[in-house]
Amino acid sequence: MFSIIIRGGTPIYEQLCGRITELISTGVMNKDEKLPAVREVAKSLGVNPNTVQKAYTILEQRGLIYSVPAKGSYVSGSEEGIMSLRKSAMKVFTDSVKNALACGIEKPSLIEAIDSL
Image (cartoon, rainbow, N blue to C red):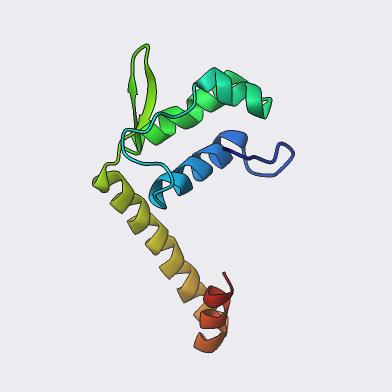
C-alpha cells in the first residue's frame, strides 16, 4: 500500500506522510477506514516502528487521521483537514507559478507543464 525510497533524499516519515495524505485527499482511503498497524507498516517497509509512528503522529496533528487507544489509527475524513491541506498546496503552487513567471517562463509553457502532469 505504501511505497518509499530508503536511500532517497526525503526522510522516510515525510514520504510516508505524503503517500498517506495523497491516498486520503484523492479518496482512495475513506472516512473511518483503518490504517495498517504501525508494526505492520514498519515490517513491510523494513523501517523502525518509531519512524512510522512519527508519520502517524504528524498526520493526526494535521487532522487527517485519529487514533483510538488499543484499536489503531483511522482516516478522520475531516473536511477541515483536507481543505487545509489543499489550501497549503495551492499556496505552494501559486508561489511556484509566481517564481516561474519572474524567471521568464511564459504562461503557455506553464499550462503545458500542468497538462503533462
